Image 1: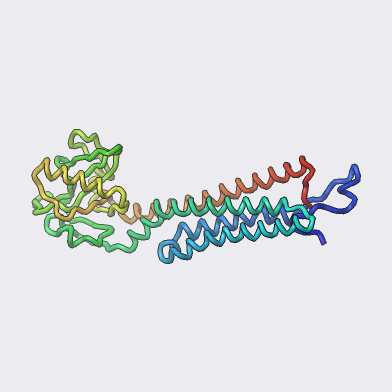
Image 2: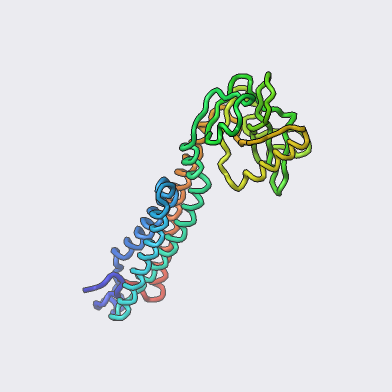
Length: 296
């Protein structure tokens, strides 16, 4: 019986003018198996399983390498019994590539998009917050904050801390009341000059903007904290428990944009990998035919 990667052993192999037939099963397996492997790992590494049960997401990577090891073993056995292991070898390489690519792309998609969305979804929403009366310590678990009428940005106290990028901050204040501690700050990157009070971050020029979406990027928070410390020194103010927000009109739409980006990059990734893997399979078919190793 002819195997998954064996040569065609009938007279068509040896007689001129006879075409060797390709093993369509082998082609289909190599076309779709690495892609399914990529889709599965990419999905588990990108979405809610990674957030709630990261061990399952990590296990999918080991499973992908296990599939590659099985393919390598089958190729070794095919060679031992005199069959051509070419498609097995191709599948081994394709499974390794798909596993590594899915793990890396999925992890990036998770940390840059979906992790932020899930964190914000799990944090509390606070309506009608007066930044002059309610301290940052009371809002430590806030994800979305809607401020009372009369709340705006104090552009005259905005500053920036420069560390390659500009980390811009401006206090969120109430028109008629001065806070004991400036704990609410609108933030943004590279949206101010750093030399004057010209905060241009988020929806700074939208008169209907009166809400904040919490900054969730841990790697940026220390630099914004340094910017706040500069503001404390420059304007002789106090910020005991600073909280950082993106200044917006609709925090829910902005939060959902992280989720939408996560799904967009997932779809882009799976279609890109299918195209890449299809190209590799087609190249392998041409290569096998040219070197006389056209496995059936």
